[in-house]
Image (cartoon, rainbow, N blue to C red; front, top):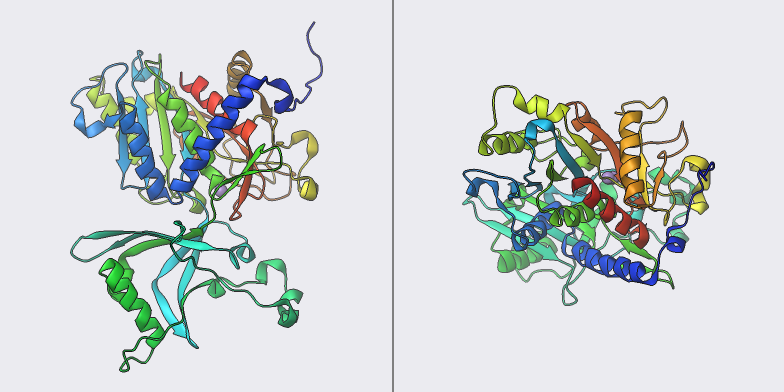
Length: 459
Ligand code: MN
Ligand code: MN
């Protein structure tokens, strides 16, 4: 008999011991990935290593491409596009899964180092949508690159290994915080007060006016061979130094930094590794700059991804004028980005019939806009039907939801960018609690369903 009511199932109740083992094993591998990749550059580096181990090669190293070939293009060490060439001509369209690998964090300002009353600090400018108070009084690490004028590039990673020091941003003791506590939460900590504490021993260089700052410069010079001016051409990112961990007595969840959107990045990467010789060419995008609007030459708004596809068309020998536009019009995409999970403590911001729940499978957003679906690409019903068919035939648990109540907040993804090129796109990712916080929460069950979804879609 047909089931008339759409009953929402709890994933853990639908699986056997075997599947549970697979889910927990996958979660361990994912946590390793999170701990090794706390910035977009580190994720790209790690992804390249994984790709090379799985017979993917740089597209520039290939003169011609045929079905089954596995290639990638690394865009300035910050985003990466991956393809497995399909049996059909590209003209018939691509199957694309697109995630992003940048996460909210604090970036150092170009002139970051200063001294005040015996302490040395680094000034920051936050990246993406953060609640500033969450970034004080937690252990932080510094990751990134410093580029000298001679072209030498120095990689920095301090605060991850047990022998490393960590850094922190201080906050006022409650005893003296009366005035601060009266402020609105958003004003409690100001952007200009997010200053990283980095030292307090004065240098024995008696000539210097700021001897604590001078001492830090001496340490940096010894360790990295840099002078203060070299920080002008650096990209140094401040991220939480704690590790991703299993969460709960039952270990059913993961707490970790940067799960938006590395949870979808990792699961889509793992998905495309399993694709051998698909009918339609399979593409995986790991993009940068999503958290600040996808601008710039490593963001999804740039043309670099189009050039990657044009290059494939050249190398499969089918290119001709205006073919690229047609390829996009025939393509389908899952915009792999996290979904807001319903948090029972803050359930008033969600509408419970149309919210995504942790542990109930992959979350699908037909649209992500608010207040009249503003600024959103809103997937067509035909395409939603097609995706439902794929998920149901693959026995993947899914939920179709909205980001929050109609007139509440909302958020964007890269979906509209590809949709504007003519691609059929739907948002499809893992529900998260405490999104954009230094420690975000996901369900291991949903992570595995995301992996199964992206794999099924690309195959
Ligand atoms: Mn995201
Ligand atoms: Mn985000």
